[in-house]
Length: 327
Length: 186
Image (cartoon, rainbow over all chains, first blue to last red; front, side, top):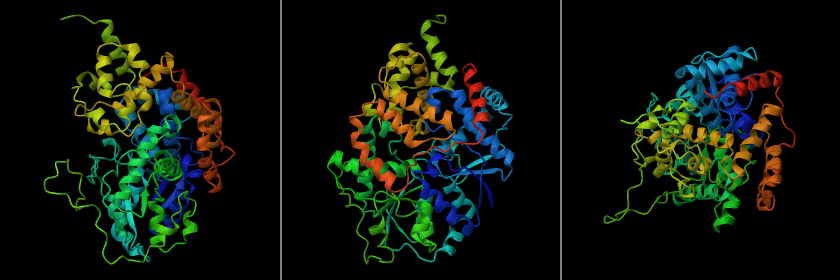
């Protein structure tokens, strides 16, 4: 299966391990990723805060280049923010004639044109789950991640808003409590813990603008994963990885906490389960070292510790979402 | 029935600059947005309050509110809104209007966005080191001393580059962006 590949800026530096591990697992899983030649930044959340027409045109150039390159009608983005922006502009150009006309008028200044709907924008996690599939993935597992307790962290933008893959998705992904990353990690042999905050926000760019706001959101996520005795958090988004990993010591200092929760990408976990060397997957470049946690692989604990204390019958607290059976 | 007043013009302006925002006039004031917002406690007004203020034509108060600048773009409000109001997109619209009319007092958030855009306009890609340097040296440099260790961590793990990556088609990209910026707002 061939795809136009849009790595996005994060994957060239701060999230390079995500890029390395994506490329390492792609060929063995039958995925051929061809990078969009000379792609540019998607604008993140910043461009549209200042200039909307330019923000759409910025994304439009990437879509137009991908369509012209003609590798595939599928463009795959591993970064959730890139995925959102590419998908949103394609969707808005299709739905709103004014957006379509203005964006194409701007693109014409660079001799480009984009026909909305001609590229199908997909997140890498969806490609692995839908096109490779759990069954095929299982056949590639040579070193199951037994004994590793994993918190699956989806973040925001692969499940929200709805037109971005949430409730209107044929997979029936629940925007409040998705299960596909859980199932993928279980396929790799990991013990997936319930993680009620799995789709909550990591704080995004607030680390730069109002650090206290961001630190509290990061603290909640680390605390929640700790409560469920996770050894490691696994994510599919460079922003989530950066905030939870690189700011973890700041958060500990700020709140007087002592979290030590490594944060890796799902592609790194797939590579490990396929028997690849950690260094080839960019493992070791996380700020909070995953070495000790990964040392647990293969050391299956006899009786898994109970994730949370049993709720007392007279507890008046609102129930937390519970792990659902997937179909 | 009363005719169009100046109160309605602000609402109309907000809607006109936001794709799909016609639903804003149907806001139920249910508060699901504010209840779903992770940074709600730090906001001057919840989104619900802000929409009531837009409806009342309180232009200056709305554009001076810190609320849009504390939106983390998690889309929880938008996914849950019973009236399909594109709340996150509305927050972006309010940011643009506040910047254009220079009504928002705190420079940090707008300047972060402008610094980011400056990198994209120069290189076609984000450039984290250049962005952080430009922004932090001009905004409370002393307050930012604490992030020094984080930057060192990123360098030591080879996750931050000192040099920007520049795309080949900068001329083409600039022509596209220049034309887009010269267009009147949608």
